[in-house]
Image 1 (cartoon, rainbow, N blue to C red):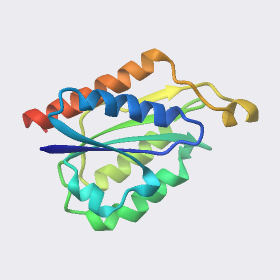
Image 2: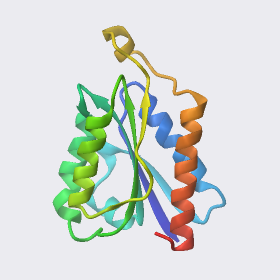
Image 3: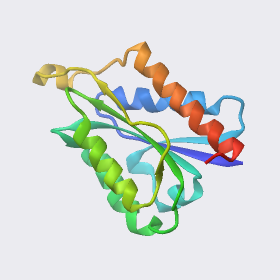
Length: 163
């Protein structure tokens, strides 16, 4: 059975909600094993055991969140040249932009020779004050539905051998 690893980091709940929506949809008919895991709990063996990946993280201070970056730092050399061609998708929760976090993950995944199989999804929650930035987030239904669609499509591609 193919395995999809959904790695997330979230301080205010948005990226976690996005990852969960994708994981729940990916579980679909049970053809793919789906592992939903917080970035700090994922190690090299987990990454090597997966056939595809979905990453969900916030953009903090115009960059990828530290915990997600630390995940990539920890696993990078242990999986280098061992995950070539495996598919991935990316979700970023942002307060305004999100593009720099996307750019960072794409560069890391290019180095790992992973294959981007869906356009990155940036969910802009328009948090611009300290109070709104730090507040718990609720991701609207429409972006969550897009996360679910991506998760289901990634799982279907793994199950059918497209990826």
